[in-house]
Amino acid sequence: MRVFRIEGALPEDLAALLSSWARSAEDLQSHALRLRAEGRLLLPSIRFDSGPVRQDAARVELLRLFGHDSNAEHAVVHVACEGISLLAAQAVLDSRLGSFTEKSGRYRGAGEVVVPTPVELAKPEARDLFEEKVARLADARVAFHAPLIQYIEHTAPKLDSESDDVAAQRQETTARTILQHLVPLGALSDLCLTANARTLQGLLSKLASAQEPEQRELSAAIKAAALPALPSLLDWSGPSAYRMETQRALGSWTEELLGASRAGAEEMNGAVLVRTPEAVEERLVAAILYRHSDQAYRTVRTRVSELDQDARQGVVDEYLRRRDRHEDPLRELEHVHYTFEVVLDGGALREVLRHRITSRTVQPQGVRHGYMVEPEVVGAGLEESWRTAMANTAEAVTRLTVHSPEGARALIPLGYRQRVLMTWNLRALHHFVQLRSRRRGNRSVRHIAQDVYRQIERAHPLVARSMRVDLEDEGLAGGR
Image (cartoon, rainbow, N blue to C red; front, top):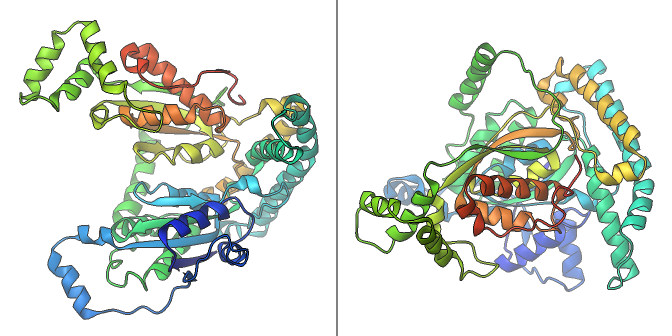
């Protein structure tokens, strides 16, 4: 694990650097030096260090006199975290108010994934089993690569508009994306986070309160990197007794009230609408008209309830018809909320969680909900071997859980599914469905976006009518 602060880069230079780094195999400093040597980015003043911590009594007093913590939101730092597990990275990415760039796993070769043994599995029996299964997954990724490429070249050949290199890169990216399903959650990843001091305090406290030793170590490392820039604003960033004790207590209550898990393997990724707003059309139209009225909400709502369907549809159409493809709807849609239970593989989950304007509750990673088998795996004649690799890994995860549930999760491949409860407002849903149903995106996420749209369409056709969605190849968007 290596954590350091980034300073001295112009904002747009930093954005360009991180965009390029995320699609490279280099560490951040080496990549920055190469771009500078090639003249692609000047980066004349960029620095990668922590530096000494210097308290300033006068500055502390000025901050204290403000009276509350909102002034800490103006103090922003950029911190790179290299060599952390996908599990730890997901804990960081779950911070709603930060900004993140994570290095894509698609730019690593099949045999280039590093998976260290968690400290929780230090006993020889557990360590040996973990390392054996990690090695078997690595062997499978290498062995499956050539047959997958051969099948993809046959079914998705070079286009007339493509050069040989572009076509080969596209086919290789498809293969690597599929093989990511065989990468364990303990694999090392890199990310850069941008956060203000107030957000960072909450993130550090969450990580410091985690059961996983790696997350607690990461909390201390991020704090050490940020402190020289924020010496007075990270005083409350240690473990939270509330978080730790509540998690333990609710674990016991859940077992007592709900009993042992009865989860079975899910047949496919998907989204189920579990809660819809009441009188959604009335609420939506009333919220739209309320902005332009001086009447009380109850009066507006009563008048809207008397409108016929054509009038309501007319209001919604008028509200949304002028936006271009880059514009989100206006804010009145935020008064309407939908809740879905989503089942999706670990790789897709990481992309869905990047949509931060959601409320989500993620169940612990496990091997009870089945796993992805992409159509290319079946077409390449690899299905039986794929299922064997997944089943053998799941059996090892179950055995390792006896030693440490947290350590065992590091072996779970990204292809295994999880459940997550997600509540979106309607404005955020417009953005999610339009962006994620596109054909160029992650196929698993595309299937979820199409599912979400179809269920809203069945429940509330007026609401769905204005959503922009790509339904081409619906039902074939990903493996089942």
